[in-house]
Amino acid sequence: MLGAIIGDIVGSPYEFSYNRMNMSGIPFWNRDCRFTDDTVMTLAVADALMRSIDEEVDFRQEAVKSMRRFALRYPAAGYGGRFSMWVVEDDPQPYGSWGNGSAMRVSSVGWAFESLEETERMAAASADVTHNHPEGIKGAQATAAAIFLARTGNTKEQIKAYIEERFGYDLGFTIEQIRPEYSYDVSCQGSVPQSIVAFLEAQDYEQTVKLAISLGGDTDTMACIGGSIAEAFWGVPEEIALEGRKHLDPFLNGVLDRWSEWLAKRRA
Image (cartoon, rainbow, N blue to C red):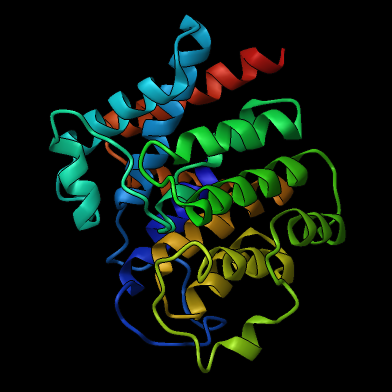
């Protein structure tokens, strides 16, 4: 999950820049790096997931509670307009979104379960409290499935084949091919495949994040999605992990610590 959070932080200075760039010579950390709503919601979903499993309560209800509570704690993190309305509604209901918010917040689901079927089922549940459009659900499921496959020893070729067959995403392109014409796109269908391809092309975690950012689109979210898969495949280098933690406040670091402890106990 830290891989998603660091992707968000590193990608944050480039969002809305509309610049397509070669990131090879650009430092990984930028003085303007900060966490955004992607980090806040990633940790909110993890918080809900832990509580729902430990207390045997409904995950969807806990997700609504946690997402609203975390959003109100960090009101300036950069949420979309419709989500901001959902947070303060008396009776929040799904609003048919196909946006990539469902994919950027799902990484904990990819780590928590021991079967692909359960992973995809819970990924759908994490999405459909807001993003109940089929594309919103598919984006969350594809991301969680890729994380699950990456952490359970599958090759990139196996991950690519499964995502293409199961979800119908075309992953048969390169980042270099699409970079000249790629534009800002917050839909799952227009950003999740690109984020997955950034991982498939990369040689390590850092390169995955840089390739995702290089498209110049929704850079924090795409680096978050790509980074979440890259972490499951390679891990996050210690020096990057330590620097990433410095960008979180005590509350968010506390949730991340609790998640690490919870996951270790679950695997014991």
